[in-house]
Length: 425
Image 1 (spheres, rainbow, N blue to C red):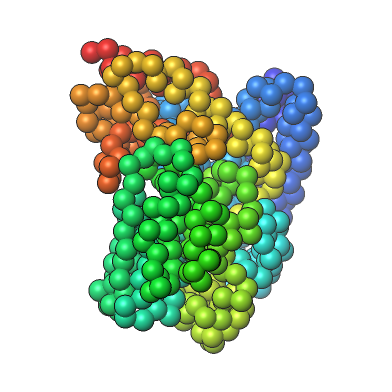
Image 2: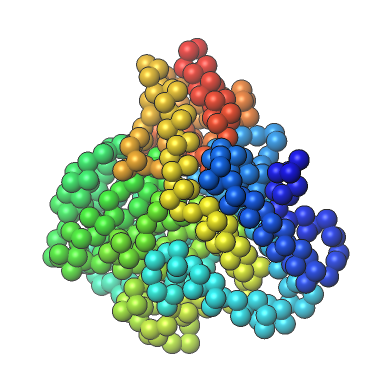
């Protein structure tokens, strides 16, 4: 009962039409009580701590959501903040949006930089990793014949963006094609390096392959590229707030992520990093007053957008910091190892993802011999109401399983039992 009361985590919605400032005060008070109790559990009982985290989310009672890799839910504190800010905006949109909430971006930029490990003057907020990365892809001043190195396993939006530049501007795309899983850094780096020439301008690196969770050695690839004066763009959609690292560790020039994945920020929030000395040379995707400006804020000229979503990111930052980057990664990795260890020895079950901590985190892709990806995904849902996604993309075929911090071992037991049931048929 004590934990249930403590982890109500923002019962502000029960206040109905109360004054927004009253709602916010109630939200803050409830959050502080809840976070204090969570922190008191950290050194007492690890499972009790994670049970508390589960109660901080509005987990569905009718399905087991194991597709957090697509888009992750926000904890209650973020949901309630979003509702509050949205209600506030609708009391007087142009006043509260531009004169009140817009003023919160700079403090939030500094708080985000502390997590990301870079200068706050190198970060811009937008709506998702596709927007972040396409800002760079379409903003680079490339010429006909300039070469770009990327892989067949990169995210489709990014591949299509590069293909559009190829068609429009005559750049040349050089492709690497992997057969995952691979747990050999040198083999991965060498595959990229073989495509580098004196015409290569930039290399596109997907830090964590979304299809199966393969972690690529982005820093080592970048180091090899920099020897040849090649710029580096990192797709961090699945690595930020998942793996503990700092952007500056990667030796990259450009980097983008979606905050509604592993940070559990509101759906439709993203982040762009551009190294300070590169900002002036990148055209913004949405025209700014000075396209040659060296100010990162030129990439935030989106016009009217949801200020409620943007400001709620700050609450997701607080929630992430409360858990801690290292503790979160250890939990996510343990969840993946837990269920894969229960099925990997079955002769008809194949895990087509790395299983070591050096090359993987929460995501794994599973295959049942003799069954298509769609058949396995359908069986998981029809048999046990497990929501996961079938993958059929460039040498990767299976069902992607993506737990999150609120996922329980009981749910993963059900997953393993259901996979084995199909494999035994």
